[in-house]
Amino acid sequence: MEEQSISPNHKAGFISIIGKPNVGKSTLMNILVGERLSIITSKAQTTRHRIMGIVNGVHEGTEFQLVYSDTPGIIKPTYELHKSMMHFVHGSLDDADVILFVTDIFEKHDEDDVIEKLQRTETPILLIINKIDLAKPEQVEEKITYWKENFKAVEVIPISALQQQNVDGLLAKMIAFLPVHQPYFPKDELTDKPERFFAAEILREKIFTNYTREVPYSCEVVISSFKEKEDMIVISAEIYVERTTQRAILLGHKGERIKKVGIEARQEMEKFFGKKIFLEQYIRVEPDWRNKKQKLERFGYE
Image (cartoon, rainbow, N blue to C red):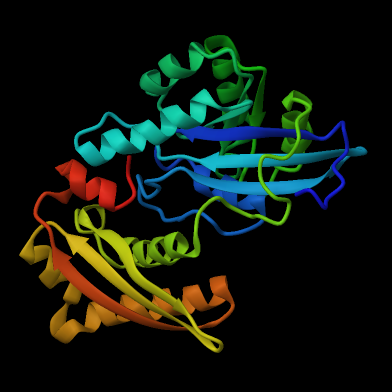
């Protein structure tokens, strides 16, 4: 950091992306960061941690560093795991300089639990209506009117994260609210998370896309070994489930299903890390891990 010449007018701040599950927060985060850092699936509650993505640049002559936080979707907790996930959400609200409150065109206006938390903050809020590519113009207008009348936001912005529609204009709006501040992270950092974290997330994503119902939600992935060699990375992953029946479902007939998951995860990891991957998977049964504080701590939850 000492070697870099940072402008005295440099702006830096934390942007928290908040909302209910499945409104497109992770898609938006990945587009804003320009890298695939967050899990994206059609299932709700796939994000379990607070994942930071760091973007540096210059806007209209002003140097900036934006630190985005993708957070778990706001839910009413039913497990200790959910309480921990909500703890990440509260943390990201506490240190936010700007909040992106993401809703979507299909929301049934049942975000009371989210709204209650957000209406108490003094932090500027940009309310994002996502997935407008799936709606008629009059539906979009209707949503904009509803939110303007019912929520205290500095601006209501309709976008399509997937189609990257109206996303470009967000940058200027966020930078306008950032304080003059030196960078929080070195300029060459992309995220606050280690490589092991992303290896685990990639494998967890493949479990979400290959299995239905309760199984993906009962799984946790722990990378027990991550050895970087000259020509490859050797990764050993433990997949935790709550019941022996879930282990059997994960394995599939003669281990075929978990083998498919491993192949897909390895291919994705090779793209992400830019190296050949050797991946080993072990399935462990840990009854009721979602309610065991000690286990959750070991898995990286607070």
